[in-house]
Length: 533
Image 1 (cartoon, rainbow, N blue to C red):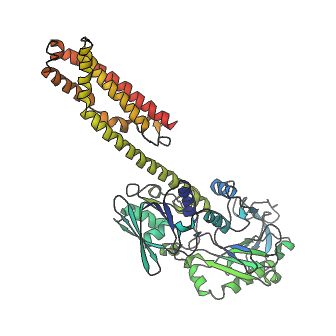
Image 2 (cartoon, rainbow, N blue to C red; image 1 turned 135 degrees about the horizontal axis):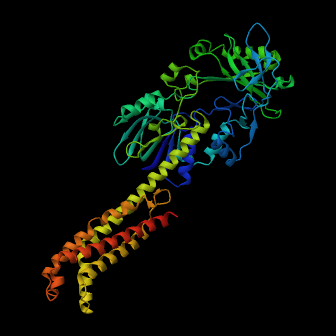
Image 3 (cartoon, helix red, strand yellow; image 1 turned 180 degrees about the vertical axis):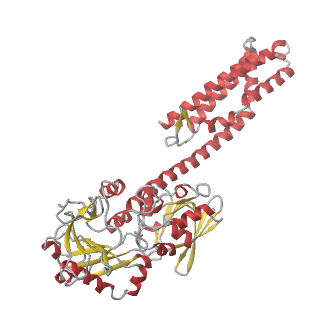
């Protein structure tokens, strides 16, 4: 049985798998597509130029997780060309005009406004080998045998101690058991295509259905050409087409930073909606070339090749509800609280970029979600390990409770043999409890407890109440047993004050036992805090 099964081989799933492997857990990743990467899709032109048909950019200033991962993997980045100008085509019957971009309004500035470099893309960077280089770098570091492609999730069943997955691989139905399952998938796809037994709560299902998949209904086009002729004409490649017949809403330079033998490329987001794209599917490459020619001249498309990716036709990305939303609109609010929590008592988790509270929908969100689930899995694993250790401690303590009277009798006999008879019951009870507490501290010290990640509130470690729980009521029980023993003990019959202790004497004993308990509780807490430190 697996420790963790990850479903979804996008950036989130891959990053999480990387963490699981580093922790030496028994894990496996399942992806419905015949490739890894999810919405990250980089293809090669006929000349070998990497072309991003999915995410292209990341922003180091506001996306630290991606920036850190790119640096850790040693990947080369490319600044997005941006001189602050945008070529604006707002009338198909007239030539485009050059305008400065105004970042305050998000639109072209009035004529005569000076351009601000980097205003349009705000410091965006690309990867030299396309975003696919990020996926490839992570994949290379994972054990190949644990990566299962073309495994589409159909059902998830909770068996109380573990979860069983049913995955479709061609005509075969594959069943996989795991202690914990992470669904690193778009929430809407989970709601639309996965059967849960028992059924998920209605409010959680509603959250899954209501969470849009970022860019699911969008389409992207890339034109690969031998040379970046637009650069030779003094353009950056940034252009907007806003007229009603526009095929590309936005274009940008997708070439290497320096001229390369593999050529150059312009990329753009398709302005047509999914229905229009299906209608013009055969002629769409020609329409893309036509618009690029209108923007940068017919020579810019010579010997060009158009690559298109319509994500609305990608069943592993786009749900029916995403099509109903359309390809445009503002950025949704992601990271719903229900998607942050564990379900099925810590056996089911939701991940993926749309579950992230920051960077939701972007590559950053995928890494933020992976980091969150990694922490939560660590905490859950630590809790399991701690519970196993504490159950061992409980078993040890049950035996000590059974033997507590024997500790008292041993203390009584030792005192009598040494002719110590002053406050004999009081001293014997206190000695019995203190010896038990000392043994308990030794046993506690041996336990393999994971305490570092657990909170300390107002000086009390989170595990302290759990460790002390088996001791509750023990002192009172032992006192009652000691009094009964005294009344039947021939050895104590010569000591009336001990043979039948009065209420005041019992009250004094209780006070001393309470002080010993308090001291023991403080030592337990300090020992747990010391383990954490």
